[in-house]
Image (cartoon, rainbow, N blue to C red; front, side, top):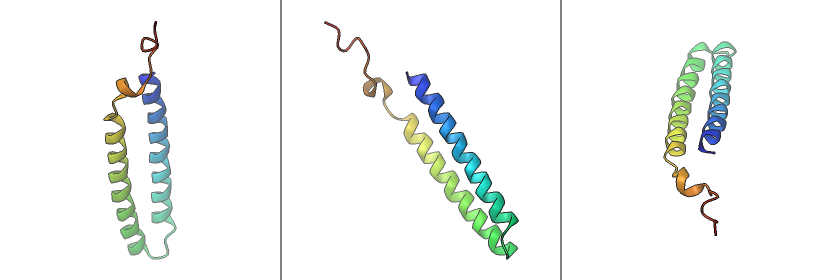
Length: 76
Protein backbone atom coordinates (compact mmCIF):
# COMPACT_ATOMS: atom_id res chain seq x y z
CA UNK A 1 0.00 0.00 0.00
CA UNK A 2 2.90 2.33 0.76
CA UNK A 3 4.29 1.74 -2.74
CA UNK A 4 0.92 2.56 -4.27
CA UNK A 5 0.75 5.84 -2.35
CA UNK A 6 4.30 6.67 -3.44
CA UNK A 7 3.46 6.05 -7.08
CA UNK A 8 0.28 8.11 -6.83
CA UNK A 9 2.19 10.96 -5.16
CA UNK A 10 4.88 10.78 -7.86
CA UNK A 11 2.21 11.10 -10.55
CA UNK A 12 0.68 14.13 -8.85
CA UNK A 13 4.14 15.63 -8.28
CA UNK A 14 4.99 15.28 -11.98
CA UNK A 15 1.69 16.92 -12.93
CA UNK A 16 2.57 19.88 -10.70
CA UNK A 17 6.02 20.12 -12.29
CA UNK A 18 4.53 20.06 -15.80
CA UNK A 19 2.01 22.75 -14.80
CA UNK A 20 4.83 24.90 -13.42
CA UNK A 21 6.82 24.51 -16.65
CA UNK A 22 3.68 25.46 -18.60
CA UNK A 23 3.27 28.62 -16.52
CA UNK A 24 6.97 29.49 -16.82
CA UNK A 25 6.84 29.09 -20.59
CA UNK A 26 3.89 31.44 -20.86
CA UNK A 27 5.42 33.97 -18.47
CA UNK A 28 8.57 34.11 -20.58
CA UNK A 29 7.00 33.83 -24.01
CA UNK A 30 3.96 36.09 -23.78
CA UNK A 31 4.96 38.84 -21.36
CA UNK A 32 4.77 42.31 -22.85
CA UNK A 33 7.87 43.49 -21.05
CA UNK A 34 10.61 40.85 -21.24
CA UNK A 35 12.39 42.17 -18.16
CA UNK A 36 9.25 41.96 -16.02
CA UNK A 37 8.47 38.54 -17.48
CA UNK A 38 11.92 37.29 -16.50
CA UNK A 39 11.60 38.68 -12.98
CA UNK A 40 8.13 37.15 -12.60
CA UNK A 41 9.37 33.82 -13.95
CA UNK A 42 12.31 33.79 -11.51
CA UNK A 43 10.04 34.56 -8.57
CA UNK A 44 7.53 31.94 -9.69
CA UNK A 45 10.23 29.30 -10.24
CA UNK A 46 11.82 29.97 -6.85
CA UNK A 47 8.55 29.84 -4.92
CA UNK A 48 7.31 26.80 -6.85
CA UNK A 49 10.53 24.87 -6.30
CA UNK A 50 10.50 25.73 -2.60
CA UNK A 51 6.88 24.66 -2.18
CA UNK A 52 7.39 21.41 -4.11
CA UNK A 53 10.48 20.59 -2.04
CA UNK A 54 8.63 21.23 1.23
CA UNK A 55 5.66 19.20 0.02
CA UNK A 56 7.84 16.23 -0.94
CA UNK A 57 9.77 16.42 2.33
CA UNK A 58 6.59 16.43 4.39
CA UNK A 59 5.03 13.62 2.37
CA UNK A 60 8.01 11.30 2.73
CA UNK A 61 8.34 12.08 6.44
CA UNK A 62 4.83 10.75 7.12
CA UNK A 63 4.83 7.62 9.31
CA UNK A 64 3.04 5.30 6.88
CA UNK A 65 3.47 2.32 9.20
CA UNK A 66 1.31 4.04 11.81
CA UNK A 67 -1.19 5.60 9.40
CA UNK A 68 -2.03 2.57 7.27
CA UNK A 69 -4.21 -0.06 8.84
CA UNK A 70 -3.02 -3.62 8.34
CA UNK A 71 -5.10 -6.78 8.59
CA UNK A 72 -2.96 -7.99 11.54
CA UNK A 73 -4.23 -5.15 13.72
CA UNK A 74 -7.78 -6.54 13.80
CA UNK A 75 -6.92 -10.23 13.98
CA UNK A 76 -8.62 -12.19 16.73
